[in-house]
Each structure stands twice: as structure tokens, then as C-alpha cells.
Length: 335
Image 1 (cartoon, rainbow, N blue to C red):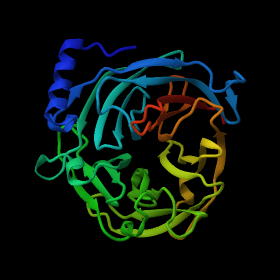
Image 2: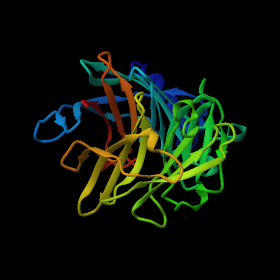
Image 3: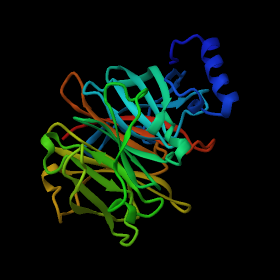
């Protein structure tokens, strides 16, 4: 399915940005993008639809002529599972809607992209803050984690595509994380318990068996309230997390090596286990390797369908590589 924008007008906008400097950052405003969707009918060669506690509903391969489309690394989805806001590795917003039929994703519509803006409305990518990896919606706006710089920023939730953000967390304790091992997951517990903002790093720079977690007391003045850890095994690293409305945290993980290729895993655990000093293991819901229809899965969103089922939506980061794909996958939680 294609977004119904006049192709000539879209190409003119994108061409102007490209000629001016190669990215939409030169436009510094929200522009429509065309996204083509190709259905994924089967999750793996077996044709099965149930995988432990999950049922595969369908998926999409997403492509776009927009030069800055790709690298999707975090998302926030509306309660109905249709509208969503995503972030990219190059410091851009993607806002769009997911079309469905009988629970199966059918396409993307109303898609817009814009550079993330900082001080003096300067694109974050131009200030060295292009490795944006995590996103969550809070009562005060959208919190965004920026790897390598090891920062968390806050953007107003009324118009994040056109409004500048501000630094929320800088320096210690995130500065101790490895350059490519920064904050990959952000969640904002309802009611601010056990913290207003929870951050999970990709992995520990000193302990290969640990995923470090950080608790911050408030959104407006994010002071550290404590740390916790999640057990890491089989070289899986955190890539995103989300909280369900029944108080469970769903953690998305990814593993890659040249021998085994890419793999993904989803674990869940009660939000009540997240507290200072905790060591969390959780329950594994699904593990999938390169034999399945996956890629570098980096974003997770939770919603409810009309029947009340909890729906998991996943997005992949293609690293802007011709050898990888941007995927959208959907599962229903059975139990």
C-alpha cells in the first residue's frame, strides 16, 4: 500500500532536501513520505501461526524512496494500535498509521518524517546526536535516548515533529556506558512507580551477564533513584521495552554474530520486580533466528485490539543497508 501523496510533489520536496545537503535535516520541517508495504504471510517455513504464548498475525516489508527512511530503532504506539511515532538511527521522527484487516497489518498511511530538533532548532544529527535508539511517551512528553552521547532528551508531546527538545539526563551515570552500549529501552511506569522513567542499556561495559537498568525520580528533573539489572545470556542484548496495561514489561532483545546470524527474543516480567538493587530474569515468550522472517528487530509497541487481546508490534532497524530490511511484525499474546 502506498501513501496517497502526489508523487511529483513528494519528489520535489525530497529532491530539494537532497540537493541542499542530502537529508531532510536541510528542510527542518515535517514532510510526507511514501511507504510501500509488501505482506509477510508466514513467520517461518513451517507455516505455523502459534509460537509458545504468541500468535503471529502478519507482517510487512517496508520500503520508501525517502533518503532518510530506515534505521527504525524505537517506537511509541497509540492504544488502538493504529497511530505510531518512531525514531531513526539518524535522528529523525517517523509518524504514521498502520492499516489492518482482521488483525493482519496491511499497509502504512499518513506517513511524515522530520529531523529531531535541539537548541536553536538545530537538527540533533548536526550536533553529533544522530544515534537515537530509544523512545517512550511520558506525562511530560516523549523521552528519547541517544547512544554514544549517552543522553536522554525530552520533547513536547503536542508536536514532537516540529518542536525542539531539551536535555533531560546527561553525564553520570550514563556516561560510564560503552560507546555502542547505551540506552536502548525507555519506559515510563504509570503513576511514576517505581520511578518516573526507567532506562535499560544495550549491555554492560564490564559484565557480559548483565543488562544495566537505571531508575529516575521525575521527568522534569531526572535525578537517579537507583539501579537494577536484568540477567543477560546467550549474547542477547536489549533493544527496546514497553509496559502493558496489566503491569508487565516486555523486553525485546537481539543477537548477532557471523556464525549464527541474527536472532530476536522477547521476555516479559512484572513491573513490580523493577526496583533498586533488583536482579530480573523474566519469562521468555519467543526466540527466533535467521530462519524466521526477522531482521535487526529494535522497536516494540503494545496495544489492544477490538477483542481486548494484547498486540505486540515490532519494527526492525535496517542500518540503512541494502542487505537488510525494514520489517513490521505483529503478534497477539495468547496467555
